Amino acid sequence: MKKYYVAIFVSILTMTSLPILAGDTLPEGWFKAGSAPSDYKMGIDESVTFDGSRSVFIESDSAESKGFGTLMQNSSVEDYLGERVQLTIYIKTQDVSGWTGGWFRIDGGKNKTLAFDNMNNRPIKKSTEWAKYTMVLNVPANATKMAYGVLLNGNGKVWFDNLSFEIVDENTPVTDLYATKLQKKTKNLSFEKD
Image (cartoon, rainbow, N blue to C red; front, side, top):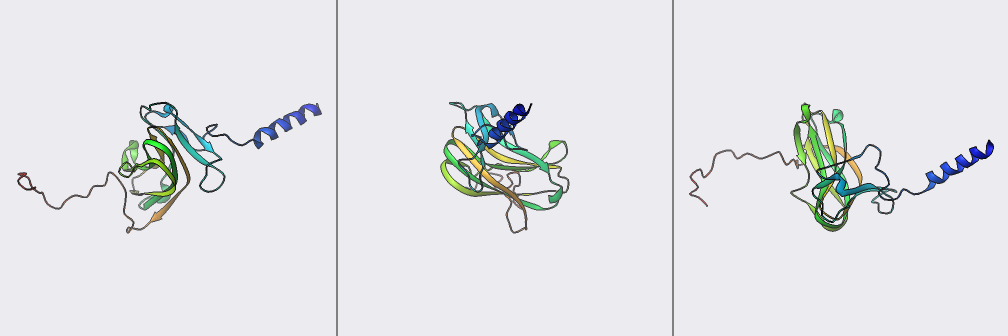
């Protein structure tokens, strides 16, 4: 009987000592989503990191992706209600033919989007080294959750690492794509001005 316990112990020790190969598993708390998540491989990478011993990646898995894939997480906004919050992500890319970027969304009841930024107005393309990217959203008092991650739309590969949230003051501009600045008065209603 002792032989079996030793064999099991050695097997477990061997399996837990092996490095995690890229794409073997998703990090705890994260999940795949998007309009075409099956077109992308996603997982942990121990060979390309910004800081520490791991990063995560999204890589196109088909010749022509039919949509985007994202690796994402949802969490409570309880600690941020009524605050302006900045999400910081470090991102590196390789041969991105479409675009990639971080994204950050604040939802209210019935999953109504209250604030959103997916960096599509400042997309990351081609090959880039590690760089810091930020998204800033206001979290209204009626918010119920936040969702965030990185997306890849098209071919290529993106790595990301070291996400962090911090409360910032009103001097930090929001990047909310839903926030529009309204003009004070109507203009050129007869279309006679250039």
